[in-house]
Amino acid sequence: MVQTLKQQIDQELEPRVKAVLNDIARTLVGFSPVKSGAYVNSHGFEVGSVPMGQGFTKHGKPIVNKEAARREALAGLTAKINSSYERMKTSSAVYFANDAPHVEKVEYVNSGGHYVYSKARNIYG
Image (cartoon, rainbow, N blue to C red; front, top):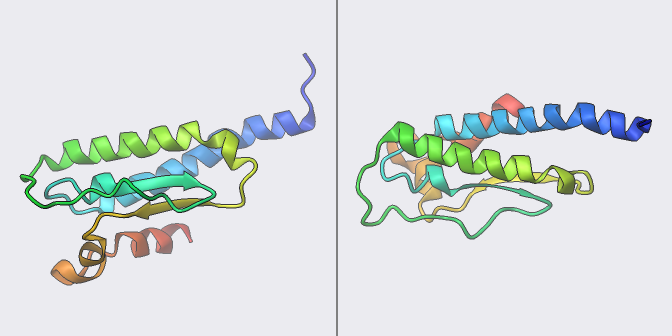
């Protein structure tokens, strides 16, 4: 079977693109504070538009195991990234966002702010 140059380039790019996006996801999850798991599990990834509608509230939730919550959050982001590659080919943008109701407090207020997205932006641009 003869591959076109476009197919060959795509086969070489796909793992690289996914690797960078998964690195960003790991960074966001790693910098995220974890108490109830609501913030870390509210990270989203979307192609072409800002992810919305998955934000979890921390109200009434018990303190959770940090590493388990991080693993769960990363697994969700990784699955979304890996299943979105075909749509990435025709889109001009991909987005990571967090729509937890308490995102402003986590990012900028509590304990001087965790600046999760600012830190990731400083690393990846």
